[in-house]
Image (cartoon, rainbow over all chains, first blue to last red; front, top):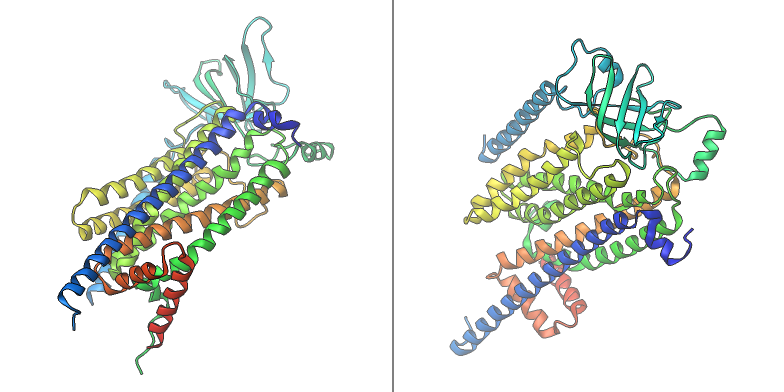
Length: 65
Length: 149
Length: 273
């Protein structure tokens, strides 16, 4: 259907519109996934810190009965 | 009634009230929420609108006349029942075709000619490959013929 | 013997919800990637150019799915808002909150791609017709919902106010959907309805369906993951979260599969006891 890569990119003269649509969509999806990943890592780190603190406190004071 | 039932009644009541209110508002603004009027509606107007408005319909086949020395163009917009002559001086959108949908913004003079200062193409909801379209035309059913306005 | 829990409330319990997402999300992501690849291939290499628009119509393969998801996610959000308001189920509020950003993203993309599609076909990026205006209102509803939540410090109160807003805004969704039938709009009518055959070539329709599936799975994966993080934060001081964290510490974060297996085993055990 396409006459080489150049023809594909050109999209029959509508390249900027088509790739402007797909590009922005892809960029926003990537941004959302990255932001979510960062949030997940932060939360996990926070939970691990809390957990270690508690384990440390328990070993110092002895296990809670 | 328990607290939960009360809350449910409240939420359902609020939603029902909202739906009714919205329906009433939409009904009241029915005419002014219209993006364009059809040629038949223009013909039925008792007095000419002073403000700019938009008319929409199909570009009548064979009605497009382009000036030789300028970008001026005139064509008829039809809703298959009535039609209005539109004149325009400017660049038409890619999808401006005879037999296809169009919306023109401008004013109408006492002669009944519509002077557009903006022309937008309106496309139908049919998507098909060129070969399929050619086959349909051979069979004598031009696309857009089923479009209603 | 105690009566069994009502099954549909099982995942309203944060612990079960966490395990569910842990098991489900990787599959949702894989499904989304597979469908997206198939959809893009069909959309760009199988579906022919449109007889009128040429190749610009290929924007449809993301414009329509994102517009559908924008509306669908709002309906879901409103449904969770009702459950939150009436039954005061915390998980419903978490779900509503986590749907909003993705819904806003989808609606924005629908508007953006619509503008870029409108420019070459209609001859304008934007008009104030009923379809476009009501979709813009949808975006503002999402943004308003999120702003309201972050504006109120009290989580509980902010959540309730936002739920009410989500509920009120739901009348906009049928207006968007039916606007092209109720009024003359520049936007064309529906190509795909539940009641009649789609008015597009089969290969185009296949690409549209694949991309819609991909969008749906993506939205499900992202909102569930977001809700999972939210749940972990809210429940940070509970024993089950500590258990989850400790198990991960022992198994090592680099082996998420093991942690998942452990968790679901733990949940099964709890179900038996």
